[in-house]
Image (tube, rainbow, N blue to C red):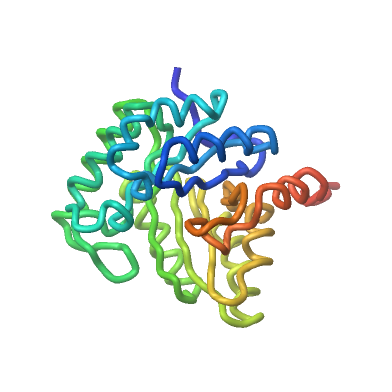
Length: 256
């Protein structure tokens, strides 16, 4: 039976796992299960190569919850080709991952993590088809790490959708109240315009409100951490706080 990553009826609370060892990843996952995680995101590139043999053990610790996996170019993957990274992603999906992250510039490292090289784009589409044939899902990501206007964000999301992604992911930034407010508006715009689920995140100095309310305005999930350590992404809020807000805030508009 095909396992869908997203809960569907509400934003999926996803705990990101960045760990060098399987044992530490398993401990974090088990703690997160008790604290109310819906799903997990495992960044395989952070796992030491010898620890990747234990992916099935890591997945099993979630008590059946789905896994979003990434295998980016950095971490222990430094120096590997994109082909090698994507082979590792396929291995992670075969071992039990549900949703695979393909960067928008896979096979052709490009500004804004979105290649326009037709050969690279064709290879991406074939990889997406391969993953779909496995009964798995694909998220395509573009990390800009800077403020982007609505037109640019929409253009990236449209292109990710066009290439066959099941979920579009864009990471920008905001360094003022005005930019953060605009990111909130863009979130609503993406919900209106896209035909697939999306994840729109931001960093910078002004990201906390956007990270919190984005799932309430259309983003398909919250990315959070079980606790902060040296590898954790500090812009991702803690699970306990996200769970509290998600469970206690009525954000669904009234309908007459």
